[in-house]
Image (cartoon, rainbow, N blue to C red; front, side, top):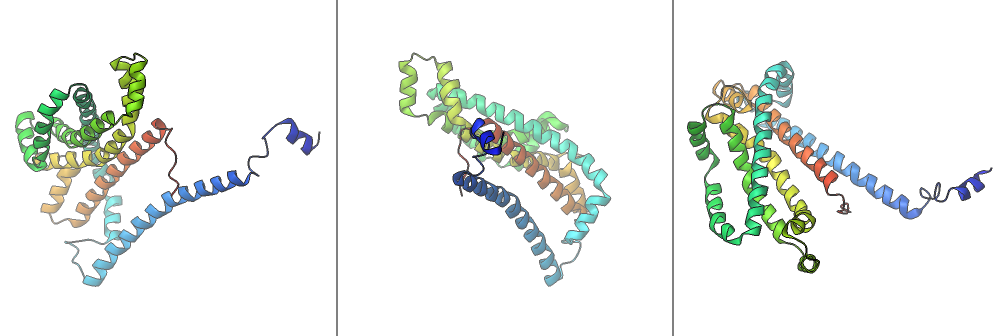
Length: 282
């Protein structure tokens, strides 16, 4: 059997790559993937170069701002200590992320189904969120002690409000025609919630989760500032008091890396869960 007969025997086996529309789509997709990888890398490289240039031009003293190379040397030389302190911070941030977002989803569900409770307690939540984080942290440490519990709680509080607001908006912004159709079909509140409201709220939810992914690390670090002997927050304080700027910047880099890792995990989960959204064409 020659190639021509093989092509006719298996429809579409070799025609797709030769399709101009397919090739254009594949080229555009490849371009988007490269942009998503190269442009962030260029931004990081540019930031590091600007950091080095400012130190070199203005002759910044090492105890104020070390060079990128000094920070890199510290990251390698003290990698064991940094990783040992990163682990409790990561556990506190992850615990706060899970608890805060689960609580926000549960409260949003209650608010959507009971407008009276929403009118009563939403202003209370708003006022509580307006209290500065550095003011909440000492109170929680006094109540819960000096262990991981107050740090997890602080991280959870940081995640709670953005997720609550976005989840309520997502659950409420359902297409009225779709809602009317579900009622015509005699769907129960549970069916309406899981088959309509929840699916509609997922994009809103993941937008909030991306914010919470970075904020939970900030909450854990702030909690460690108030009272902790281990963790990235405690290391930042110790390095500041000892004027050890390379270690201070290395701890900040580790904290930022942890936030970026959480953000990446949420982004990957969003792509896996929400598969019906079209790709960004820009």
